[in-house]
Amino acid sequence: MSEATTFEEFDPGQYQTITRLTALGLASLARALITVAPPEPKAQVKRELLLVGTELEAFERALAGRHRGASQRLLAEEVAFDQFVDGLWISFDARLRAWSAYTRPGIAPLLNDEASTVDYAERARQAKRSLELVAKVFGAEGLSFTRNKFEDQATAMATLLQVISEDELGDELDKLAGAGLLEALYDCQERYEAMVTARSAREQGLLVNLRELMAGLRMKIQMYVIAVISTLDRDEPESLERVQDALRPIISFRERARARAASAGSSEDEDELELDAQADLEAEAQAQADAQPEPEVVVPADAE
Image (cartoon, helix red, strand yellow):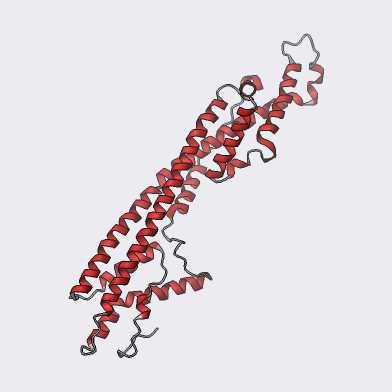
């Protein structure tokens, strides 16, 4: 859009509507307006400009807080704990399935061998029961829950432990899978649910706070724009150029936002915050955790 060359051509509406921008984009716009502000602004303009600067400082502190809240170290610790818990469930399943060795046809001659020092018939019964418990506890889904989102996995694990508790399977499972493993699963479940709750509160709190600050910064920018436009004076021709120079970032940011939206084939949406470093940090943390060796599955001696 070409700039007006006369007061009659000047359209204040093109400046009074702030285009939808990402969190970083809105902060950049505020910074650009401060940078090109008139060197000796009138009192009202100066007052509104100072308010924009104050709001921008609070906004940038919130951005820094959000970054710390979603720090790579914290996310990496959460991913590592998730993988540790995954490993416990994988070991639990593997220990129960290890009894399947006693279901193979080759065991038949040993079942009634009185000379044997091993009670293979009892081992075969334990194997049968172990596989029944695998089916009862894990069902058709198996260990697929370990690939779910943290919130969904927490729910799935709680369901499995509830089945074990309500059906009083603990003693049997301890005997077949080895004492201590089930106890660790119960203990880690509490910790896992606490982690999920903390993550949710952290993300929601930061997002709500950020949206409120975005609305505040947008309003301060709009008040500044109104103050700048009010300095237009037909008796002072140079005031037109001064106003357009001061507000030019609004036009340039709008054009850039439209260009990005066009290239992406979608409209800009304020809810799709460019700042959302959470997904990127989680992906990087996941990559680091994936680089660690797979948890070793330990089979108890009496399951061999």
